[in-house]
Amino acid sequence: MTFNPQFSRIGEILVHLGAVNEDQVKEALVKQSNFGLKMGETLRKLGYITEDDLLQALHLQLDYSIINEEELLDLDSEVVKKIPEPFAVENRVIAIREEGGSILVAMTDPENIVIHDNLKKILNRPIKPILIGESTLHDTQERYYKSIRTTSQVEDAVGKFEFVAVDEDENEITVDSKAEADAPVVKLVNLIITEAIKSNSTDIHIEPLSRETRVRFRIDGALREVMSPPIGLHAGIVSLVKVMSKLNIAERRLPQDGHISLKTAIKSVDVRVSIVPTVTGEKVVMRLLDKGEFGFSLTTLGFSGRNLETFKKWIRRPYGINIVSGPTGSGKSTTLHAALKAIRNIESNIVTVEDPVEYRLDGITQIETNAKIDLTFARALRSVVRQDPDIILLGEIRDDETADIAIKFSLTGHLVFTTLHANDAPSTITRMLDIGVPAYLVASSVNLVMAQRLVRLICTHCKTSYTPTPEELREAGLTKDEADQIKFKRGSGCVHCDNTGYSGRTGIFEILEVTSEIRRLIFEGAHQDVIRDSAIKNGMQNLHESGMEKVRQGLTTLSEIIKFTVSDN
Image 1 (tube, rainbow, N blue to C red):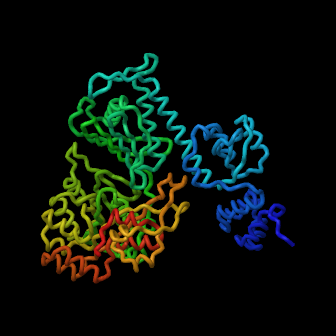
Image 2 (spheres, helix red, strand yellow; image 1 turned 120 degrees about the horizontal axis):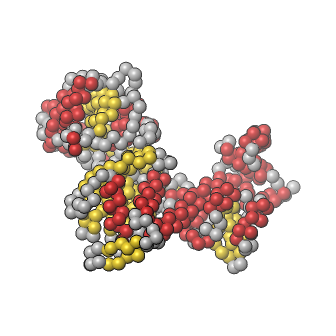
């Protein structure tokens, strides 16, 4: 008998496609009523099928086409907003484009007659349904309706303004007499900060250009432009940020630093503000620090199995210094706080001295330095010694004074964690010597040096195979034979990743264990290249190779590794 999917149940179609077996369908039938879901959704909830499996089965059963995800990258917002957001979200639909006298509407349930009738009333046009997956629909709605909301709010905030040039360099803002002078600017700044928090941004950049203000968010380590208010609003934005962060509103010639504590409906954040004068006006950079509970652990940072065991071994030693090095934004603080989270217990007194306190950890004493009242790293550390500490985290070794105190702690039975700005693990040793720490003290106090970087992960929704160019292979230090052994992946860009091809980040690590051989080399003043060669002979994986391991696993791209590491080849 010929199989006809249009007269078959969804479970039968999925069995025919080989996505599930009959026992799994029977299990889903039993649990379907408990879940209150349709059969396909029940099988997805049980983890037996993917969203694509269900879409293919519905396509065969209902004879509706499946949306081409590439089309979702460039929808007309005017068409999308023809369906109000609350209705679209509740009924799981989105308008795609106009087709003659009809509108193509992507739906997860195109057979729902009630939704069809309501859409016809809302649009006052016939509709053509097309199938779309749940997660794809959610991310598409989030992308376009968020853009529509943001654009509408920015227009509402600046709509009452009229700009009159005063001279070649500045604009004077003339405010509608019916409006409160600073209300639109307040609304705009609140919008910028709120959208940054929703986007899980780490930084906000507000910079003046010749004709507009550019607002960018740093997401997954890369800056993305999100809005561009008129340049006439820039002075008002900067002034408001200065007022919020208690800075001198009249000073426009010198850099200023401050901070804002905010409590939003989403979460509480501490905002570190930096304002610097530029040739086009003052630029504002705000770093967002989450005040919530620290959510990372050592197992989620990206360590390989071998590196994780090595790191765990050294963070449980009773004394000595563990140093994590790398540039700003490479995840050093995250790694150290994950280490403290892993080793904290009721028997140990853990104290941190940081500038600023980026993460809050229960059960740990955290001290934030304050230059305005002369609470420096050195002064705070001298007080910490009277707090009976077992383990100390020093936010950063900045000079010989803080380095000297940290080393004395480590040599008197304390375990010390700290960070340093250096290119890799061996050069961190050189940096310690450059600060002014004697070689014999570095050799006798340091247990472990770990360099790290954060690389972006390929979006799992649009991951595809590709062949790198000869130039990329050359920059990565790969021969053609080596490249032939790797299945290279990258993201083609989709609505799930905002067309970047990346979603999330992971760490790559270079762990240098200070063994007796390494201690001898440091004591003798050996060059960092000699120290590196010795460490590699003893099994150290350098940053480049750690990154290439993730390329081989299909987690990140070759271009990300080229961007952050240097090949020895």
